[in-house]
Each structure stands twice: as C-alpha cells, then as structure tokens.
Image (tube, rainbow, N blue to C red):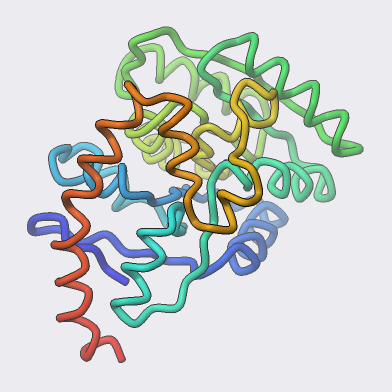
Length: 252
C-alpha cells in the first residue's frame, strides 16, 4: 500500500510481525543495518507538512503498520497487512539480539528511563548486552552537533541494534542519518516502547486492544497531548480512504 503525501508516496514494506522479525534476524546475523519505522496516523499527518520527515521516511527500508487505521487503509487498497505496534517490538528485538550475541543501544528521552529499561531488558533476556544508553537534551536537533556525537558514540559502542525512543519525527530523522553513518547498525524507532518496558506508561487493558480502541485509552490518559493529535489524524483519514479505494483495482 502506498500513501500519497502531496507529490510523494510512502509505502508499507513489511506485512506483519513474523516477516519483520525474520528480516531483522537475517540482517543482524549478517551485520547489515536497517531503519525500521512504525507508521501510524500521526505520522501520516506529520508527513503532509514536514519535508524533512518525508525525506527521512524515504530512507527507511522497513515500514510496518502501527495503528489500526493504517491497517484498514492498506486493506482498502488491496494489501493484506497486520498490526505491528512499535511498542510491542522492544522485547522480541532484544530477544533476537541476545540470541545472536549482538549489542543493543538505547536512545531514550531520559537517562534514568534508558538505564531502567536496560536493567529490565538484561534481566528478561539472558545474554543480552546493552552497549550504550544515552538521552539527548531537549529540544533535540537530529541534524545538530549533539546528534553527530551520539552517532559517533554509537559507532564506537559496537552495538548492532539501536532502539530509538525520541518521538516522531526526531527518531526517524536520526535513524535515516544513522543508516548512512552507521551502516552496520539496525535502527528501530519504538516510540513509547521504552516507557512500556519501565512501566512509565501502561498499555491499554486487553479489552480495549481487542476492540481496536487502544487510542481511546491513551487519549483518556493524556487528553491535552493526544486529543488534538487524534483529531488531526481523523481529519485526514477520509482522503486516504478514497485514494485507497481508487487505487485498489491497479493493485489487485
């Protein structure tokens, strides 16, 4: 499924979690880097107005559907995809890294959160090595000198997998830069995944997730931050749905 963003197009490139983990395992084993983005409606909305974000997304080779609206839009367009939340990928990615004896780096919003996540992940996955934990200052410029220093530290750490929990679009822009500067590293933008590991944020109850209404749970917990975001996202969905339906015959 390709999503039209102005004159550009952004495509989902991996259909489901099983396929994603298979690709990641192969690349980690071979020492080949990648950049993984987890597309949601907030991303689609930001991509419309942020050319830098669009350029960064174009350099991601692995893109999955993180959000039921993206899954539904893809299916309207004739592509069978499954939901792959970035927040659910931290544990299986670390399990792969531990099994393959590959070091992990964590770039988090705070040093305390990153260190807490590192301790919990090491306890959960025997043999896991966390080679680097870092937290950039705020506001963080993914093109600035601090980003350059972070990527230098990442190169020196020997890590093969870098978990980015810096928020969109900063984490995706840094991943796109890192894909070029650290070609042996796999960058995975996991968003709130690190906060879920530490318990700073809570997943929606199973009932909400089964009903495809996790967004409502999150909006209730952070109405001022997430309410406007979900409204903006909802406004762009009809246009994407119409385009998906128009393109469906060509994709069948």
